[in-house]
Length: 277
Length: 136
Image (tube, rainbow over the protein chains, first blue to last red):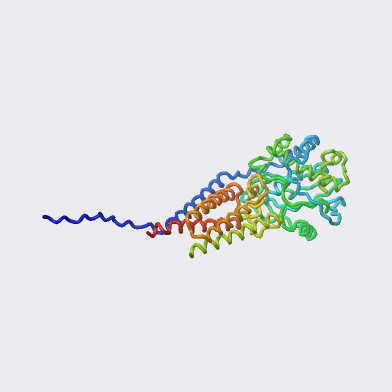
């Protein structure tokens, strides 16, 4: 009788276990790759800066946006603008020509300043005349990159109703341009404690900081395209920019005791004045 | 136990960050944060993506809820529930990082701190969930 050899179960060859650090490392590496992919998408989708317009072409755009018919502005009303204008109590701010002063502090790199200059130019053009406005765009490396706009640096404004004083602190590459005087800085400290720009003081009766609409409304548009869109009251650009311009116009009308009547007596402006407080 | 305590601490730290950002939003005061071309908490937190869609509630309020629940979960024995919760958190973080980098184009330091804490919690959940299988 031959002895049966005991049946042995096959021995499984030991498998080396996965080191504990592999899974976390794989997750971290995957996330790092995803972040790189996001950066590449951002780089590809960021609109390139549009070359500035020549002086003549810029002047044409300014003429176009500053001669919009009152009926169109009235039709838009406050549009889609976010009314940031708040009443402030201070002694009357008077400009270099003895008129109530509108003071602006901003910077060329700042996308919110870029957005807010459009309605400021349109509103103030109803009380006077700008000259020397040049086109520029906000920083390429900030939020809402390359937002098309104008710069107040080097421009002049004449009016028989209000004075406009503007300080652009840096260019679009954040190189220094102008500095506020101590009196102007005191206004900023008093009414804009967060230091947000743009800051606008309307004769020490009203003030606001920030843009009344998001700059992405102007994304990848040329100055001419924006001017064309403003001629269409139902366009998103007209609702945002003209709505903001009407709110600023109403505040300026409060400073000028509703002069000129051709601007301030419209039912739209009168109605917006009541909302300003 | 050590990992559990670390996850609990990360949850509480994230809760603190979320409470701070929510308080800043409702108080209307500036957030303490450096600002340059790449970093700007103000730009991110004032963008339309900083609010939960269709509401005026800041995204950081959702962070309060997520971190609070996460901290509560990590007071219990680690298991699949912590892993599932952290997967949901990590997926949201990836979406928010996409918004920051691609749509807004700048980084919010406080938001990034919260995102890193979510990642830490996820890695701990992954490690503790894998722990038994890997070592057996």
